[in-house]
Length: 229
View 1 (cartoon, rainbow, N blue to C red):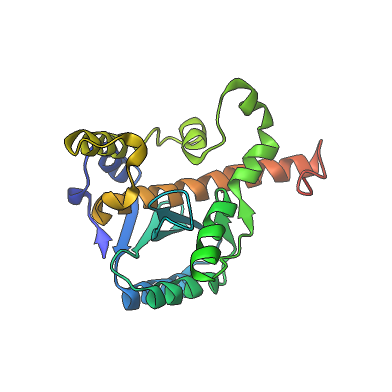
View 2: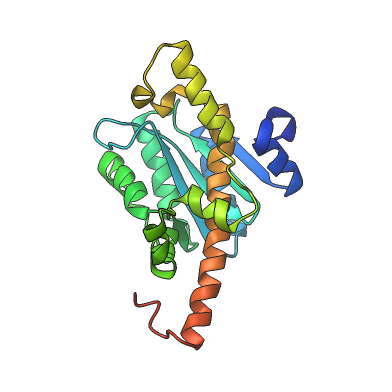
């Protein structure tokens, strides 16, 4: 289903309206596969991919969902919360088989979760973290990160769109007398998680367009072997 602006709040609602973003969401395997087939048939350019997990350890944490950016302002979030293992595997295989070039940010993390937990590898053709590390290595020397949020705040007009998500986490921990370090992201309802994952996918795709343009400029001028790096 399409996520309407009326169901959003705060910063992300403002961005959704201002930039005419389109978010889609499903937690149903059959509908997810239909969406993926439509993307495969109709999308003529690269797509971005992002996963949501309960934590950082693929052995003990869970894969919560999967996001796909299929336009500079369009993204789909597939929630796995109510799906069984076999259904998740089927969806991941469908994603893996999409014909488009695939873009991730820190592909090692995403691929590790899918391959380690579900024995499905999602190929990555371009990694925006690797692009950023190659093009803007000096950022790390000035405590300026190369994470998706750091790069989005720096290069895109979206700012820190996760402000409310961070507040949700703080308030949840305060209400339940829980340490922030003990918080797991499966405590966030899928209807809250969904638009944020969609934003991650859209941001990754837009960053890729910026980085790829810069790489091509370098190839034609001062650094012809930049892509080898």
